[in-house]
Image 1: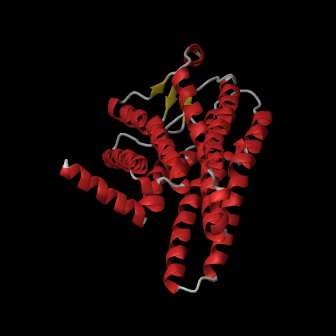
Image 2 (image 1 turned 90 degrees about the vertical axis):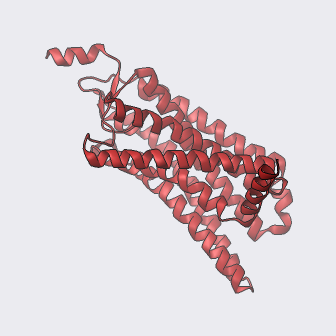
Length: 312
């Protein structure tokens, strides 16, 4: 009973994390550090290239620069704390720290969902309506898309963070996850969270199912247009690009939908944290590779930047 009382007086949470203290965990932790460094490097290079090279001053790359910035913030919000906890052996996170992680991750996850939909619409217009592209994707529309993704993501996140953190947490404050994520925290609450879960479900429809459906619809239209192309080379290239995009998008939305749109009773301890690896650690690494580094313009811009640096 004394242990329970002690728990109620501390507002800190304990993150159980991904790793145990075994030898294999050290290898896994090292792998995550490498992925983290790669992600920061790739996305920073991407942003610098887009800023510096005038050929990349197009709607697609403008949206991509926002995606890269979101990915940098997202992985930085989670991995350094996770690795520091593993190395120090301390697994506590303050109530404020936990609130900040929830707020930032929800802002970026929500914003990225909307941004990926905007990017698929951009590709749809470019391939299916090329003549109307400059009108349909003008500067005003672009700012609306990027600014809207950040703003709507932030507003939604403020509402969810405030609501989720006001629940009383009694007994154990050990979150079976590697960062503070709402579904894992709800398991610790000792009051009925059904009404709030319905709110999460509505948000899931707006941020997950609607954008995901729009992305699928865009790519179906793109593929139908591609099939009508005369050049088999162009067909092959477009098919390859579309399939890579769809793999990354499914890797992001699939586990995300599965985690946030299931009732609390269906969440098994530990399962969510392995699913979260996909949309918090893996896709930020893959996004620049899939969307950009396979692209001729980006590779050309990279060559120019390296040449410029060597000449100076």
